[in-house]
Length: 300
Image (cartoon, rainbow, N blue to C red):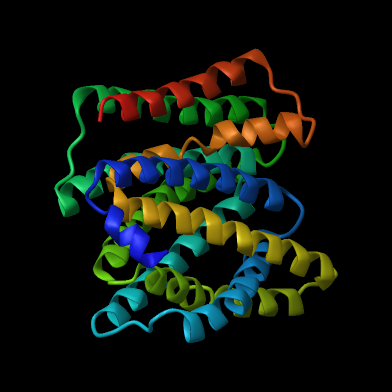
């Protein structure tokens, strides 16, 4: 698999595979959101997922892929710090604001900042039609957040700080997307970076979650948390792994934008699986997101 990935680098076929991987990441990110939607405390959910990631990633990292060498260790250390701050900001935002409002703001600011980061660090540039696509996609995501904000009935008193945290977390999405792209490109075997990243960057939140669970007046049962955490860990493997491989094979900015079509997949999951109702306004906003992604791809 590693040799196949490396042979695709810098080729038209590699760019097509990058597009497919980014869309897979978008779909799996929507599944990830559906798994954690409102069922558990966000600190505990993240801790359970990270605990499962350590369990399933450690054997692969230690015994099945080449170990990192030289400066790759320093890159992984940086990734641990960046992702810890990102997860911290995300949990704080989810505690203070409704998921349906916070999530679109995080996902909307992420690709916008990533495009600029990829321009500064990797020298990537977008054609005029691609910029139009970015604007259409981001407006659809923020429109979705605004629609949910208008119709929210509880938690308005903490919503303003939650939105600021969501914007900051979106910026951190751009930071880790750009940084991880640098890391996976700097590692000879991409799966070395992936598996050691999943292993090392998941060591923090299980400790935080365990301390939080211990100090709770009502402690939720651990079995459902572990089951959901294991499912979330495999989804995270697919989602984060796909988009990281996409950034190695194609443009970082394009991969980031394509990944943010996840609200479209989330709506489909809501309708087809969760039996939720999606009105005409949301359908229009979802169409904007999908149209923006198409424009980015056609303009490239």
